[in-house]
Image (cartoon, rainbow, N blue to C red; front, side, top):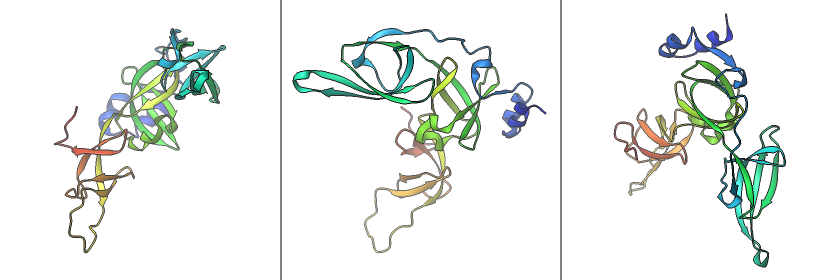
Length: 234
């Protein structure tokens, strides 16, 4: 049995019916025909306009910006202090640029995937149009990896077919597994209480919520947005 078919059998019946006859697995997407063989170069921009997540080329190497800080050197003028990650080997380096110094920004490709499941610090994803499968480390999702679940839509940024970053939806539905027990002797009702979610994260929720309720969480800061059927999306 092909590995791709084995993977889809881990899915819910609704997905396995669609994908079982088409799925193929790749640890890297470069072997799939819809991945570009080379990435188009971008444009030259002033360093002050660069942001974390942007990809640049410098001295023949391609880097992704991890951190960027504008610093003032007194009479020496301002500079941009940046921490960069080498796309090829993953090593991090620091560079300083003048705010008006021109830097070549490289455009990256952004694509949508569906999460099949996670296992051993790896997320197994599938491209919904071609059914090609991709394995990426959970580290690419950062702390938001805790929200990954089957059938969730995620987005990846890629350079030359290599995943650089991954993101879950900004708002997701979670189930409360356990809530904080009210403290005895306290007459005033607290504004919030702790709740343990089905993904293992602990968040602050209103005191009237109870175990088993489904709520909407902002994955960027783990904040409570509302009950599933009453949350306001803006």
